[in-house]
Length: 214
Image 1 (tube, helix red, strand yellow):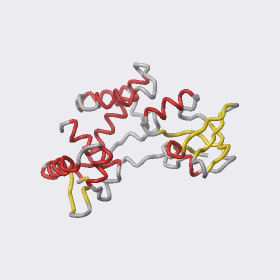
Image 2: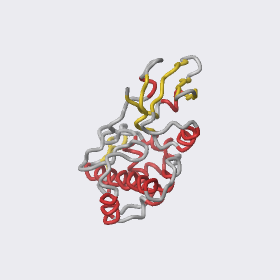
Image 3: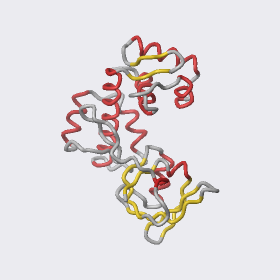
């Protein structure tokens, strides 16, 4: 297995569509909060190991081997999240950080047994797809900003942003819950949603990380 640091780089590259396009070192530097020279050094190491390919003035992209490895990391992470919630009764806002630690420690055998124990789930507790056989495109990709006032939608996926998850929990807005879009305020960049008799205000930034279906 690669070091935790290298695995975090691979995940960051995939997060920025590095499966099919090149990601600049500047983007990785800002996302990982690591100085550009250190990013360049790590990218060179990953390239020498065959996990990425680079192109001058374009950046870095995952190789086929790198993509397969990265999807395995994500699978481990999301299965661990599900295990922590279903078996150990964690809350959905607690599991991300725990899974971040554990994903670097568990063996392939452990992951296979965990997958079987959980009956080969399709999605993680946050609605993200669990990669299998290089099938990894998210099922739910329509964020709340895509809907209009008056639309009634069902929450299907939320990105792993702890503060957002804590806030949604406090408002009793969880996966598979139905809400109504009450208003979109373009001036103040907020969207108001309603569940039963409660109104919740979300920034446009947070709304972009919540995905739903009509």
